[in-house]
Amino acid sequence: MTARADLPLPSCPRVAGIHAAAASHEWMPVPSTGMTEEGVPFDTLLVDCRAATMVAGGVAYGAIEAAAVGIRDGRIAWIGPEADLPDDAASAHTDVQRLGGRWVTPGLIDCHTHLVFAGDRVGEFEARLNGATYQEIAAAGGGILSTVRATRAASLDQLIESAADRLESLKRDGVTTVEIKSGYGLDRETELKMLRAARALEGRGVRVTTTYLGLHALPPAFAGRADAYVDHVIADILPDVVAERLADAVDAYVEPIAFTPEQAERFFAAAAEHGLPAKLHAEQFSDSGGARLATRIRALSADHLEYADEAAVVAMAAASVVAVLLPGAYLALRETRPPPVDALRRHGVALAVAPDCTPGPSPLTSLLAAMNLGCALWRLTPEEALAGTTRAAAQALGLAADRGTLEAGKRADLAVWDVSTPAELSYWLCRSRLWRRYLGGVVS
Ligand code: NIG
Ligand code: FE
Image (cartoon, rainbow, N blue to C red; front, top):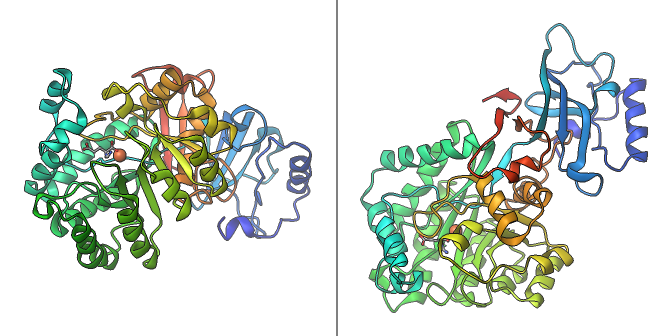
């Protein structure tokens, strides 16, 4: 929460009344201070709308019918039923916007992408359809390594522009925050170049968080010497990533075709010394101990998880590790073993959903499509899918105090939709019903 949300309650009796109402209506997000003590009105006031606050524990979607949202200094200053608005909420300087009864949700959050890369893997797509497996292609020097060759050869500008094009597609889906991983460099120069490209996208109408995917694949120069590569990453690349503040988290791919849990743990321990939290690609093709490692080191999230067993799920719940489900890779690789959604649900693990946009197994640039696939393939409910791209996605990035729900004090990153119910966001396949996006309270 921000300092603003911690301001003492104003003396305005109507605002005090709203706080009393909140105590008796669990579904109502905690209203804000409404006005500051100085009585400063909102910069922007959204009215004539319905809000899917995505605050957990109450009515479906944390919904407020006939809602109003007050925005000040780029953050939500007040949200609640329009009828309860403080009398002095708006001044002549407040920009009052009527939304025509549309639904407002938190701006969507894509918490797992490999958006920055060069080239494509369409040849691999064809090869897989002719019978080769993802693992065979990787073992033959294709797969991730083919994207590494193209990414090393690309300029910084080429990486930025090609990723910006994919980013536009996410923005059309109402995305206001996107996580972007490195991992197609596997050498110091290219990993830094990828992360710089990701940071450069921050200015393109979206907030970016970056993840140094230090252990994605073993580069040919280190063939047969995985431990030496981990040493190199820790000693020679990670310090520069940290010095330039290029990463908000780190990631590793734990799988027999990639790295062992022990190798990943060494990398994560080094990153933790620099204050960087961990995320993991875990249990995508085999039960390799990635999810258990995630719980041991209190990672933000474990992603994929098709082969996670119930014991791992129980441990994830205890350690508050978010499960990031990636139906695009599952679909494109024609996988048949779904992640343990029932167990994750039963044990109360937060479920996030993301497209895993990659040139390889998941060339998917639509977060809304990922929501639909989560429902169609794994029977997520539309509410779970929307929570998975708002509240849980923020948690998977360690940003839950700052965004992911519509609550006072959080960033006014919003998406407004031409839908009759929030379930429509998961219902359409390849049809975005986005009407407008706000970034920090400004139409973007
Ligand atoms: O999340 N599994 C590892 N990483 C990516 C795929 C990388 C690639 O094949 O290019 C993923 O699916
Ligand atoms: Fe991935």
